Length: 332
Image (tube, rainbow, N blue to C red; front, side, top):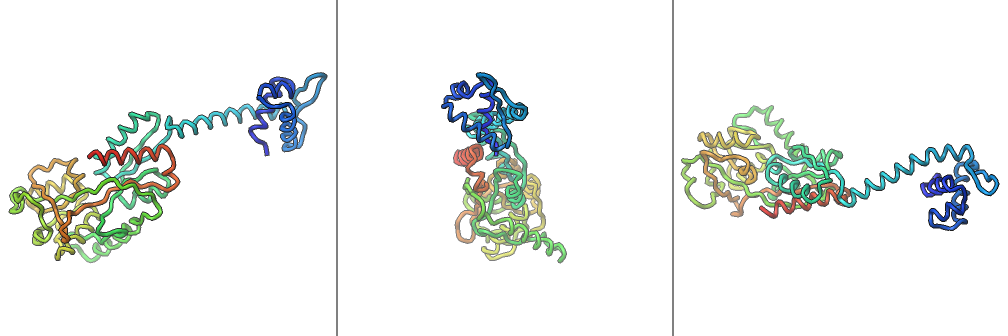
């Protein structure tokens, strides 16, 4: 096997014309140069130098090997420099995948702070909800995935409730969707960095009797309301919370678009529960926001985390991105 150190010796011998001069250039002994040249000739099974008078010159095989050695050593030097730059955070890449409400609230300050201190690290962002984002992480399409889950349902996701009056076929599709979501909710193979508990906020029409209470609303007090629900995972959690409060919500509208949820509530078409992060990106005109408590009496929340693979967690740029995301969450 040809080793890089042997190629460096060959280059020095070719440049200086002798083993002793090559030894002085490389800062080692003449016998060490001789031994390494013998090892290199043994690995290629042909002489590489020819003695001529008081000096030496490369054989034809030596000249061919030197020609390639120059490019190989230059490539190794460039590779070492690039790796050192990544290790020293002068370079590197972090691909983020985030769900929309984190993209608009946690990601911007985290990336801005990272770029301010380490401008050589490139950060990119695409949006995806879990479990799709976790599949992207495991598939090598990103280094960090921002995701969420609900503490009331660790490791599983409830079946999303179809809208009121949904046919049996659609209910079957919803159950299949729930199984797929549940399959993506296992994080045991990932490194999870907790970021924050995102409180769930109730949205009521401005004229609703509970709108002006000034305190939290128990879910049981909304049992007779018509509901507007969000994404499948959020919808499934809403059904679980309501079941814990002793009722099944009548979901007349389901949409992933948060402004649409606000508009439907403002029009008096129902009530809704949205994550607090979502309301930071939406103007809640025409609606009243109230704190929502689960049947246990505790505030309803979802857990927001940053996920990566164990090996990726050791990469300097990834570790720094996780640190910046934690700082952005702690600064809220």
